[in-house]
View 1 (tube, rainbow, N blue to C red):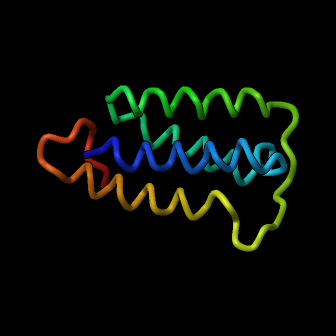
View 2 (view 1 turned 90 degrees about the horizontal axis):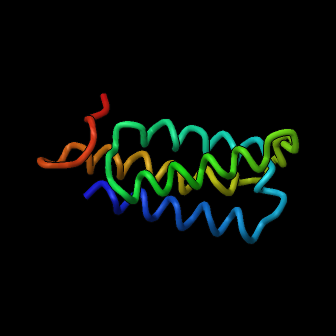
Length: 103
């Protein structure tokens, strides 16, 4: 089911955004939010639309207030995003999934 990886990513990134203020403006976090929003373009579910809207709101909120990379080791949003892309690719391969298959 495509909603599972989307729900997980939204929950994990929301936790980062809401509890680590320096991450919310970090260009690394914002790139993850922007790329996830792009990845969800072909997924037509209410959960994907909600996640895309939240990512868009974060990008709008940070506009003009972006900070350069915090050089965290490891980068906090990269792990959730990596898991999301792997799980979403697998979910989109399932018969009857709501979204375009990715190469």
